[in-house]
Image (tube, rainbow, N blue to C red):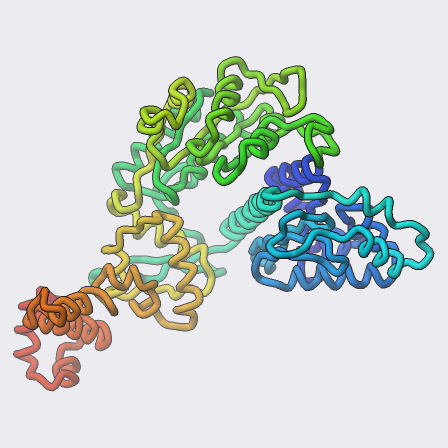
Length: 533
């Protein structure tokens, strides 16, 4: 894909457009997409842009352009987030988004910050001298320095959050595109009669069809109930409250409701209410007029304006401060809101979907959440079950995630699968996805995923490596357990791992353990490990 196609593809994403508008309107910053070749817009024949007049002045000098280009290239070649300064000492924030073509960074730079993880605020006099040094023909750089955008206090974290939202939107789009274009081939989980298909990326066969609806995978009774509710609420325009533990897919359900409802094709805007001050959240949701606060050099329509005609999804709504809850209630009551600094209310036509992992009913009882807002949001409620209660869905989700993750072996051993089945998955689907992504590193090149490739909590859930046997030994040594229990635990683990290592060959295992085959079969029966060869 060419640079122009990459830029056009990602810049038209609604999340990127909203992030760009908020950064520009609220902070005076430009959002730039950067790869190891530098800013994409520049690489395709455009120009490098800067957030400030200082940046633009530097870019007009040969030395300044070279330094800026080198700075952007270094950002694009990095793997993680970057919080620091550029060659002029101006603030720079960068968040990576992983795509099939490589890492692409979402960058905002060219500002002075009062708090930037140890970096001192910009010295105006030193900055003016640095500009003159880059361009000796420049007579006075003080005016450009005075116009420098200033990001105060915790607003640096807000800018970083906005960049992360844009990066996540890009990564999601890239993942969806890869899933649409990449055929799959079935692999195997386990061995023998217990084998189960797992899907790995291939170019010569069609993608599998997994049970579920609306892009959500699942066949358990709990998920079928969810699918039925999504189908019903999508046909309405009522407010919906989506509840469930972290990682259960609340935003996926919100997107499904939007895409299969009467507002599909219109904007879908998502915003988390967590870790944002009341002032920032109010400006983000309702917008502001020019000059409403320091740094508001342009008016902003806010997310209610950006989502006009479509859907606004508010995640972690329970974290919203009480004064903001009152303002949100007004929008839900009469469809109007007041931008920060404005004197005239605006009307909005937005469907509101909200989500939380907390019990709003209990919060109402403690006075932490407004009762009237609770009833406004609770018109229709969808409860997403945790993964541990989705009987049979774990392996289906595993198939889907393995299919989407390169470099993961196409087989999962029986012992590893037993550990996976026994783990409680407190992080739900998000934890499962992270675990599979781990295998792309720990099991890369291996013929199958074994227990040694799993993270420690999952190994321990299956009693493998530091799990039940270690606990029994510790109990015996501390006097709270028996030596017999410790020996039995060790013996069971030895047999389980031996069966795994020899692929169920009893004769080979008996020889390795220096016992007769008859004795081995008796021990296997004692521990319930006998299986057909």
